[in-house]
Image 1: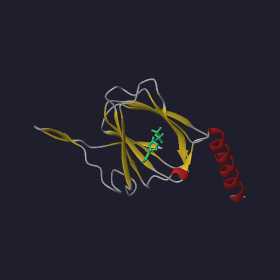
Image 2 (image 1 turned 30 degrees about the vertical axis):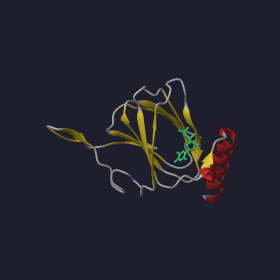
Image 3 (image 1 turned 135 degrees about the horizontal axis):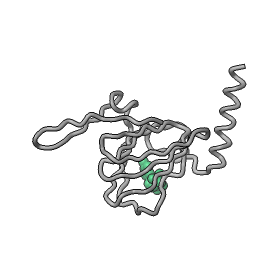
Image 4 (image 1 turned 180 degrees about the vertical axis):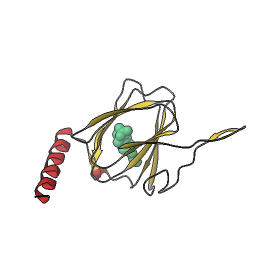
Length: 140
Ligand code: TYD
């Protein structure tokens, strides 16, 4: 999970930001979706993915992200359309504090696969724990 700052191209007409596969976007884009009209008192997300990388940008308005890989928890304020947030696999995410005008664009490395979702926080924590243990064992 990391932020990336895009380079806006401006002239007398206004601004443009371009995102390309394997350049600004660190994967091949397989899916695009956008979230809008979110009520400010609702949290979205509340899940992790087993095998999916995403890049999130507030192309209008702002929102906050809480990302937690089971060890480190971080908060991000996506408050400009030149700021991207890359979210790798096995990261619990929650989005909240959506401004009324927020349009959250998400680029994803894979198609929508419901079985890739982990929506149970306890199940996620258990999987992180077992993956950490396996890694530790393998390095012995
Ligand atoms: P959901 O995963 O609940 O959104 P969030 O992570 O923002 O809380 O998705 C809402 C609905 O949209 C749900 O019925 C699944 C559907 N959906 C798709 O059909 N395709 C997609 O790419 C995504 C992300 C969701």
